[in-house]
Length: 260
Image 1 (cartoon, rainbow, N blue to C red):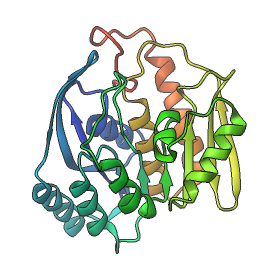
Image 2: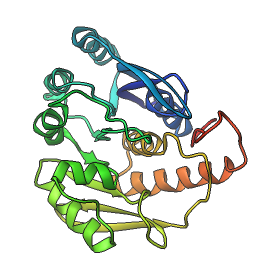
Image 3: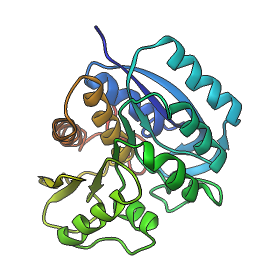
Image 4: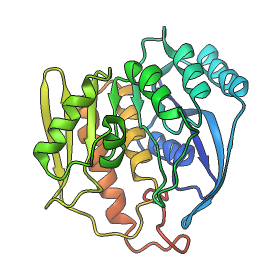
């Protein structure tokens, strides 16, 4: 039987992040992807030009339509454009008892904030307690903790454990924006912490890496992997995709991390 996953996220007109990256990751692991679009963005490899949030009732209708028909085995949540969107998603998922990978997309690579005032607090209060795994990067973790970005593995582990206190079952703190000798991610659960490291891939094509990784984890959870297995498989796959795409030229700035 084909596993099914649901992505609740924004659409990227440039095709490299958001829903588009999520579907690419789902397909890579043989998982059928369904979607509920939270916002439509006008963007390319250079940055975001405009954001239009989908009306909350339309978002709710998308989620209900998918869950009423498909046997969804895992959910990935990405960009949530407002507090109302966060509340609706939480209400519709609260009783589902499904694995949820929450990628707290708070800003674009350009530094533009993605969300209205109050969105981050709503994400913390409504969505973090539903998360099987929260997957922030260093900057997002700092925002959630009202702190500064971690600069060492010890600080990463400390912040990952602190994020557990906000409600998620597990936290994968991604170190891809850091300056360590390796690309290090820290997985924190209530049983302890784990370390996932790989060599840096020197590539200009990094657009959508966070979306792709979180969706790959969700795809593996949908397929029956444990969280540790899902994280390992997702990291290995993404590293391979980054290596394969080093010489690709799609767009005029940071190209898609997973173009195919």
